[in-house]
Image (cartoon, rainbow, N blue to C red; front, side, top):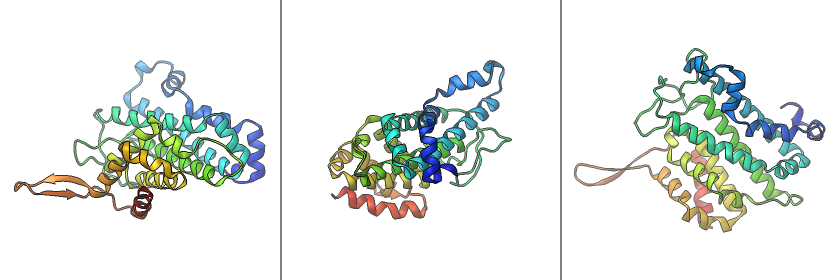
Amino acid sequence: SAVVSTPTGTSALTDCGLIPALLNTMGMDTERVIQQLLSDTSSCSLEELRRVRALIRFVMAQAVQILEGAVVTHNNALTAFHDLKGVEVLTTRLSQEILSTKASSSDDVPQLETSDAMDVDPPAGGDVLQQVQTSTDELKIRSSQRVLLFSIVTCLTVVFHQESTSSTITTPSGGVQLRKKELTEAVIEIMDGVNSYGGNLASLVATLLSDVMNSDPHVVHYVQSSGIAKSFIDMVLGKKVVGVDGAETYEPVLPPVPELIMAIPNVISALAL
């Protein structure tokens, strides 16, 4: 990551095939890699499998962070990223991780009371949860999943911003990408599960939405009709609660994260375009 922070370093690594290597890392089949690393998975404990999955996610997260630094530093890296359909690779991995999160929420995994920080998986407990569940509706987000999701959404936000400010790169806009089913469902899922995914990730999604809508106002209608706007408003208003007297009130679900609070007005303003 230190090398790609300089234009000369990024240029040299891009010429050597850095971008394809990083995208191949993001697109690899996790289960197949586990089979290659562990000759006999049937004899491995659940804790060991979780540890290997966590390590693979951290490798992917590091690859995304290097990719982000490369596309910011060097235009040729951004061009190569688009030529290799990098946005599709990232959104596919984002969708897969969210589906994996929803599937693993039914597992019986020990709960730890921790904060919304981006810390690593505790070594003694394997790939355990980072956030205690307060209701049966909340998902179990592992710290390795949280780090990877955070890295992917950050990279997508940076890429969409680079597209909107660059006059030399002609690629599908962020609005075109947002209209795709995988990214739409991922955005809705994160905002609907803000208590589980955390305020930091939700703030990144809100920033992505405001940037995309401001750079391509034609996508605002899609945001409203697809359910993205509804999920955002529901996140801001909170959970509707009906009292014993029949009166309806809203129970706040918005995490007290400064970045998320500051991003909300930007999204509301963009929705009014």
